[in-house]
Image (cartoon, rainbow, N blue to C red):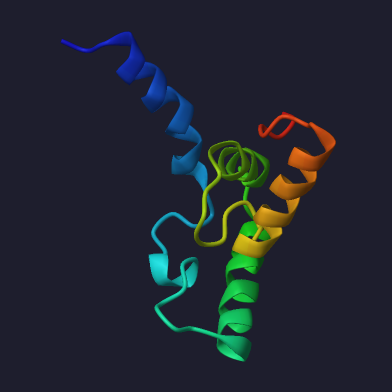
Length: 100
């Protein structure tokens, strides 16, 4: 038996099947323990280049901001960039969810 809640969750995530990141290693988008400085910056820049050509970039970014995704590069934004956007939204009273 399939619940309508489950099928909604699946439908809401179908956009991920169209991401430019599909089939790439997670390590490209999520930092290993103790990664700092130039190594981290280079990895993030490489991940963002993948995002630049992604057909679902806006949907991915919206998802990451709406759920407060704490790790990795999502929708072309790194962890610090998302924290800054969410902090600005909290201070301005803007809802967490990104505009469509």
